[in-house]
Image (cartoon, rainbow, N blue to C red; front, top):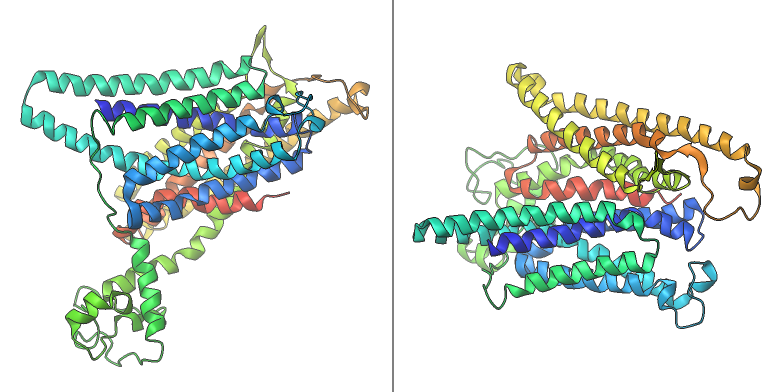
Length: 484
């Protein structure tokens, strides 16, 4: 129960922080008075770097310090970053100026802001260790429930899971509804920092009352790929035996694993040197790899070109929390008499992304059951093609809405002035942006599902854990490249 509640509190803090960072575009354009393209460039670079950091942080957790210390480090860094973000607002300016105007944001505030972005990007990496760490705790608690064989223990565990789910739901509702009534960015950032601090304290409580199980690093398959390269370079001058599948010539060669003809340079990593095999493996593991390890490394490298279209997907993803948000912020946000926050578009995007991902996954599971074997591996490519068509529809829809918005701007003289009135909204409802967010969500859900199916069928099993982070980090390269 305790571990699940702590997991839920940290997850809720993540959701709260995600909402704040999602509307950061409007902070830069409204308070800093940056141009749309300049603000979008900053957000895209930050978002791309933050997503790509999942990969090295996952390697760091698996190979060096383990999930517990990675999670602890990330929670502390994330809290410090959000505190710095709060302190970067004009309210904490040491001078007389505390308005949300460019002249009130001095060099100190800007320095704190950029430092906070870097720290928050590192703090977001706790997602790579959050779920694995608490799965370890839950497994231990389930063992205790089984051993105790009491209804009270089982009820306690179930109650903890229910409370944890309730915390996540409540936090999401608060983040989506309360923030729209808060005009001060200092308070918005401050509440996010406070929530992150509470999550950190809840996590630290496990160190004193219910000590965590701390497993050390379990090893990373990325280390194996690096070892193959190091061993191949170390034996660069050696010749690959003509009978390269002979067990006498290569390390741990057997009938079930055969060297392929591609990337033959890496085959040198499996050449056995004229020293005792046991000593070679123990003392020189970076100089010798098995045939299976060599083939796994080859498979990962051969799949690299297929990541290129997913990098391009990041360019489309970047529109959702930059340009589209800027459009909504300058349009009418009223639904009847009720003012609706732009955060509703985040909810729409997530709903359609999850729905499209679920539906496409079910279709794939059904269709691949009666397709011939030679077409099963090609089926994800059709899904990716459909997703790309959806992305084109998303961009075309956004262009049509933007053309209409620009026509309305030209028809209002006040908006064409050099210094237009503050808080003036274009007489055009922001709900015209719903179709493009629907297309964006469908594109995200289908593309992620199809890429996952594609790589699960081609990557070696040892890399399955990292596919989740690759599916986040690789599009981040495309997002960071959209510095327009």
